Each structure stands twice: as C-alpha cells, then as structure tokens.
Length: 433
Ligand code: URA
Image (cartoon, rainbow, N blue to C red; front, side):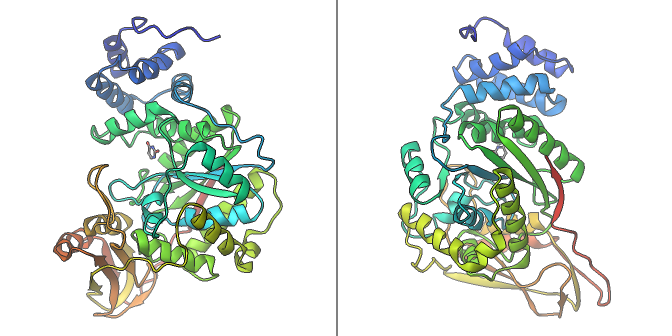
C-alpha cells in the first residue's frame, strides 16, 4: 500500500541542489516531487529550477519510472478491457505536415480495432490534430470519457482531447516547460507523453518518433534514446509499445496548415494523396495491427474505401459534416524557384514556421488559429525545378503576414545545379520494440 502524501517529507531545495550537482533521487523522492507539485506544495519557480536541472542532468530509469507513475496516479486511469475489441493508439512526437492520424484512425478502426486516439493542439511550428479537425464545420474533440467509450463501441474510433482528469501533473508541468525552455528533454518528453497515453487506457501504443530539423529530436541517436525510453515506460506499465523513427527534415506530404492538411488526408482516404503520407500511414497501421494481433491488410482496406466510410462516421459522430466545403484562405502568394536545378532542401522547420506566421499556429495556448492558413508545396526534395516555377503557395486571411512567412523561408529552400543527384533519405529510419 502506498504511504499517504506528506508535504514535509523532503526539502525541495535539497532535491534541486542534488540534481543540479549531478546526484540522483530515490524512487520515493521522484514520486514525491510530482505529488507535491500537483498539490501546490512546490512553487512554480522551484519546479522551473527542477525542470532545468533535469534538462541538463537527465533522469535514470529508477527516477523516471516512479515520476511517470505518480503523474498517472494523480488522475484517472481509464480501462477499455470490457469493450470486446482490442484497443490501440498512435502518438507522434510532432512534425510539420503530419496529418497521418486523420487517415490512420479510421483505417485501423475499419480493420476491426478500437482506436481511442488522444490528440493535442499545435504549439510553435508543429501542427496539432485537434486544430486540423476543427477546420471541419461542426467538429469537436472535447468528448467526455463516457462519450468516447460509446463512440468506440458504435464507430470503432474517436479522436479526442486529453480531459483534465488524465495526468493533471502533465498539464501543469507542460505549461511551465513551455515557458522555461525545458521542453526538449528526453525524460520530460517521455514522461509527459507516456503518462497521458497510459492513463488513457489503450491496450497497445505505436509511437512515431520524428527525427530532423522540424522535430524536437534533431538527430537519430537522440531520437533512438527517446524511443527506447518511451517503449520501456509503456512496456513496464503493461501497454504493448513499439516505436518507429521517421524523418522530419522536410514536411510530410504537400501541405502544412489545418484545412489544407484535412483536404490532403481526405485525398489519401480516397486512394490518392502523396506517396510519403501513404507510406508512413501504412507502416504505422501495420505496427498497430501487429501490436494487437489482428491479421488485416491496411493497404487493401484503404483501397476498398472502407477507411473513407469510417472517416465519415467518425467525423459525423463528433458533430462534423464530412461533406461540407473546407475553409479557404482570403489571400494567397506564390514563392517561385530562384534558379533552374534540383530542389535539394525544403526545410521542415522553415515551412513549419512559415505556416505558423501565416496564422496556422498559435503564439500562446489561448490564441485562435486560422483554419485556412498554411503552406502548399508544389515540389519535394529531389524534384527538377525551373527558375520562376511555383515552389510553394502561402495561404492566409491576413496578408500582412506574408512578409514574416517569406522571411522564415529565406534560408530553408536550396536549389542545387542541374545534374546534381539528390537522394531523399528514407522515411522510416528505424524501429524500437
Ligand atoms: N508532447 C507532449 O505531450 N509532451 C511533450 O513533452 C512533448 C510533446
């Protein structure tokens, strides 16, 4: 039996100093920090110092596991074991143009697996699934857990915001990390993601850990470390967890921005769409089905139109009209190639920032996003281009934003002389199980 929480049990300042100087915490100390912070006994400035000390010193498994468990225990842990169907969820660590969830959820649901897809909003240069779906007139993601359960029974899939009852410490800590420069820390990212995913009650989880300029993790070694940490936490908590590492040095697909990405996801569901979006969706769907032991061919289900049918049902069940026209921007501006040659670089971070400047993302959590803002790509790295040819179209309702978007793109586009061989790197870079 766990002991009752005692706010006086440890001195926070000693724990901060010890971590700062490279020492470790006992499992009890790590658990206590989360309990005390959630209960308001650790001040925000002390938690900022703790998070920064963790950023520089890291956390061992002996610290991180009880820390994450305390985050889960601070809220409710849902359980779908009575659903009569296996459950599997997917999580992406965040990228530019990543609309995979929109296709994957109905696709895997159409294969007979329930998908309680917990999703977030965009912050900074990365987009969020909830913002994308809110471009569909009427759609909403704030379902209660009873509504999610009913929808999983009736439709097989739900794309929803994490309710305040799931891992409440993460809500508080994530907001603090966001304003203290402590987001990009492997133990803090791993505990944040995994506490919500484990509390959400999924039976299995497939992680898409992004690597490259547009991702939190810029190199493969760091991304592998994050993937291994999350797989260990998930597996330890009884959730079958697998991770794929996928490239994020250039945007996924041909769009970045909310309504633009919904349109592209619908193209994929209709059997078309960009090859990279299809490839990653099928790779993740294969992992999700294997994780719950369901023998179905996701490529065949996608081609059959059954995933599209399921998409329409999921959107309707959450108040949206899947047939309604998507918003379009009031203004567009074209970015053209400056020379003949081969497109060598179209940097994910530059495109993500441009989309953000155009209004697709937010500066503060409370801000609204423009549904129609974003960037449309007309070429991908490796393509031959001619001087003056459109490379990108910028979309916004507020044309005074074009200059900042153009500025963000200035160093993000590279054209090599004609005849240069540009080999795009593989999309799926590794697997951790
Ligand atoms: N997404 C999360 O939920 N938490 C993080 O720390 C980073 C990305």
